[in-house]
Length: 306
Image 1 (tube, rainbow, N blue to C red):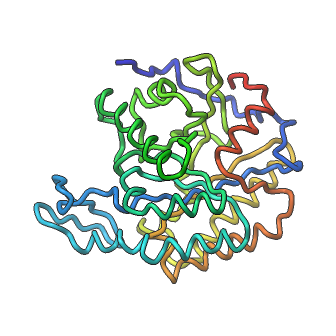
Image 2 (image 1 turned 120 degrees about the horizontal axis):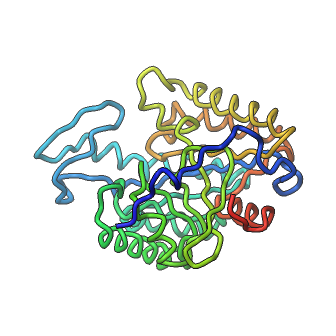
């Protein structure tokens, strides 16, 4: 087993990196909206799993028997929330990256059809909605292959990106590169910019950091987001702060969304407020798919490790 020891960790010196880099059209901020498609990949006793998920609008674990409260909370995403979220981006002509679990995509294949129709990206999010941190190497290799094959079958091409639930394993990044075809992963939370690694085959490999703070999952955190405006105010504050910093260096922001969370009628207005604010930012902000951010980063930096 290959482990990543402390020598592989990146501790910056706090100085702005690549201060002259700009995103397309001179934008200082690259912003990526990620819609997570996980419904159908969650753990349920009904599906033969040893246990049920325990977090929905409240935290309540039901063990040993089916939890129909939990199951129908997840069903709300594809049945109601998905279209409510998707329509916002389609109407505004904005790009999306869809983080898709393989089993969820098999349950909702129309998601792949919509991605093709509207030019959205599909990124691998595991087969099940689970962290691979404790998976053995052979199992994780099979998960990556099965997920990529399912996306390719339903979307028409394999994914170029990957993002684990929670922590990746000590093998994930190497297994992605050994599988081939992966340009980037998002299994990092420690930066405001992408960075490049030297891939196993010599090809550069990009890491696009993700964020949990500008994420609708905080509606499920106590004393966090309650009203839709809470989400909007927080995300807009991040955009404003980044735009000030982009006077001196580029920045990247990720906004994470879930159909079963932001897709609720009392929350969707928060997404509207964010999209309306972005409409007034003009060319200062480049809203892009994560694949496009990774490709631009490689071009702008010459593909050298950072």
